[in-house]
Image (cartoon, rainbow, N blue to C red; front, side, top):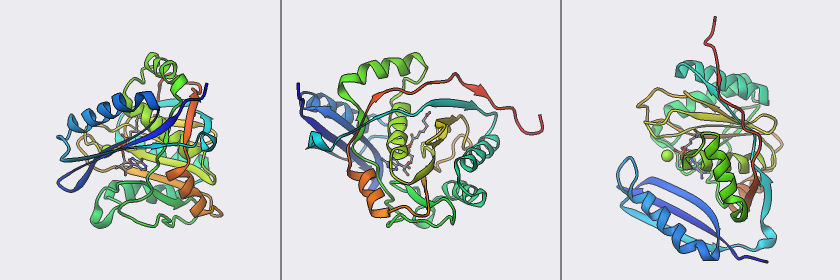
Length: 268
Ligand code: WAQ
Ligand code: MG
């Protein structure tokens, strides 16, 4: 049976600034209920409710949908954010990011990569060797869009993530976003931590080791955050951006999930 698939996108702002957003791909019969859920999320946000919300539904051509498997998930428990950032840096280097570039990217996210030291709405694209920033607009960045769990497998994947202790929609959505980024041509690794001051777990992902969560990438209360997509020097930028922003990707299988591991602090 063929089901019609729709890309649902929610964008909310508050005082003219980006507030929250979400990406879903659902069957035609789920549009109303899912839109209501996204609207409720924008209105019950931890940083206050949105002032303006846009929700859109766009029918997808089923022939354009790519199907992928989610990356493997590991969790490193780190005692403090300094240890967490050192771990992030070494995972990025293992993935093929030059050491100075990894350090510069961490510093950039911490200091605000948008105009005037602000948080960006989307992601930085960075050459993994030279460290050059390649995204066309340093305020907007690149917005990864049109990805979700495949509707027929959605509930079983959500249930398995819940059993593994990864129940929150924040984790699921970050895993799906990271999975799409890793499936893109020329991507070497990703670095991410949230701009939510109350949430300091972030991740490094790469095609070989998958989605590597790190419990501390910033001090609690810190409003910094963002994403850096590290790419090979030979990448075709227009092709990469089109894939990330426009090509629909659905995940129909979970990768392996490892139990959390403690990272001993340095000199231990
Ligand atoms: N495309 C590209 N960049 C984005 C997108 C997107 N669709 N959405 C957000 N960003 C960028 C933007 O700069 C945000 O400020 C930043 O990422 C953080 O977004 O425990 O919650 O939605 O496994 O705050 C990761 C760890 C949580 C989850 C990430 O990100 C876990 C998170 P947030
Ligand atoms: Mg955020």
